Length: 425
Image 1 (tube, one colour):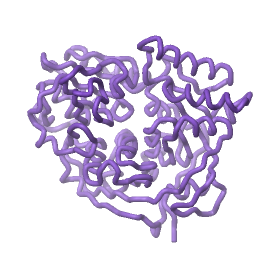
Image 2 (cartoon, rainbow, N blue to C red):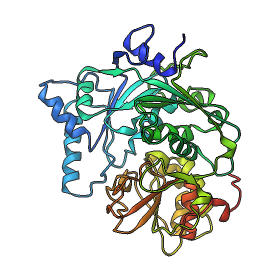
Image 3 (cartoon, rainbow, N blue to C red):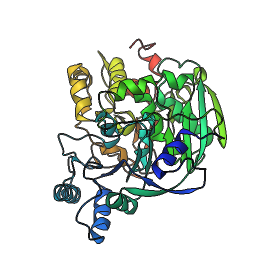
Image 4 (tube, rainbow, N blue to C red):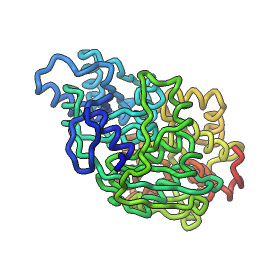
């Protein structure tokens, strides 16, 4: 019997010819990642080991992005701890404010993660990098400390699930809508400690940005990782970015999957996830008219240039509803610059939106858009748990950039076609 792409990558990094689900393997790591929240804990554990070096200063990545620019004294102290560690141990890939980005937008953009990699990050959305054909998963800060010290990590090989999306996407439907539809189908624990492999004609038609969005939210179904087999689009994306040699892995035709789910993508509408779980996704037609107070476009899920282009297409020549606060957060400095050059930022500002430097900000209730009691936000982020964006009696609805931008114009959750018709971008 053959192996899945996830099993092949783990086998290669464990120095084995093959692995099977449930097997415990020790794998060589290509990259370890932490941010301003998780790195200080990992640093504390690392220092308890009394080591004078990390396993490879070019393969440890530290990105202060959650509370940066620092919002208060505590977050400043957290960032200082990371900064001093990076200087002490010669960490090559430390990204300071003004040169940083939201970590899961930044690493693919910078070519730090490449196809075939085995990556751990002390952040649950590390699974984003599966869109490049890498095995990437989130770990705790203690495991991250061990990874920084040894360049290795133990894994239990996950069972694999295959999600096949057939057909042509409807106008305005993106990777965000496909993954919300999928999570609504299987639930927030439907892929617990499994690999979610996305395939089919609709996935092949998706941009890399769309695939990154889908793999980013695999954790919202409880998955160990999300992954897409690399193809010519992957090659085009990575060829001028890759900092290291890479390898394309694909699943064997006779690979075993614990479950296979089939979807007709042509039937999927833009989605909206109602509070307080991502699995509460419904077609936007069932959410029309829900009044909101704030719209956030950004995050490691939907802060890429494609997302900003879609939002700007809808907002161009229009105004944000007077009852709405629109906050737009480009995912990285490069994305910010590209949006600036294309005139997208001007569109957002002229519409009445606020544009931020890259930061996770409001996604985790950090800063740049905290909700008060009773307020509702529509966000392109990945989680809408109780209190996620502020007061525990506030509410967060999740959607893609098209629904978010259209809703910012009308003041309530709205299908994009009600504002501009079909997308011609």
